[in-house]
Length: 262
Image (cartoon, rainbow, N blue to C red):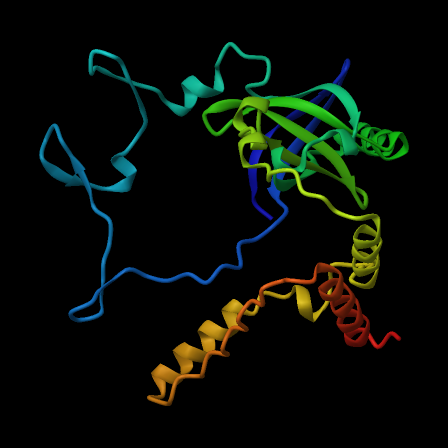
């Protein structure tokens, strides 16, 4: 697998050369933009304002726009030589329990693989120390145009890195909190029963698959063959809950029935 970043993990005085590899893949349905009149593909074109002409992607770099409108070119070499400890290193700053990390702050995961035979022993040492501690490492690295926090954890025998949001990047939810409402202990106990009835041991299985792609492919195939389009199921009209306890009990019974429980 192709790496998306290369550097080293800095763990005290121990340095572990690594490469970062995407741990996930995007399985979203990809549509192309088309001209509705004739189904022709619509493509992006890049215009240079200075020369008023189209330029190729290979001619495009990056620049930093100043307040006065001047643009200062910034090259890849400039970014590689930033006067920043995290420019080519993942610096571990501490270890915390996973429960102490707000899931809202955790981004997509990347596998870290050791680079070279010399790195393997130090990599395995860090991986085992992380696993034995039952904690995750919090680190910093410069990536995608900024210095970021990162979370390091163990998955199997591999160290996984998640980019993290900074505290001020997560909005305060207090303005969205509902008004106080009275909930009885009996209702809470019935809600606990529903949670138990809907509990699963793994996130594998038919109910956790993405059926959107299959539905899109069915529509595309029908249109290609000039067949009748598949009918969309009618969404159930949400019932107005008058008796919360009765709704909870009925939900528990349905959940148990769907799992063959009594």
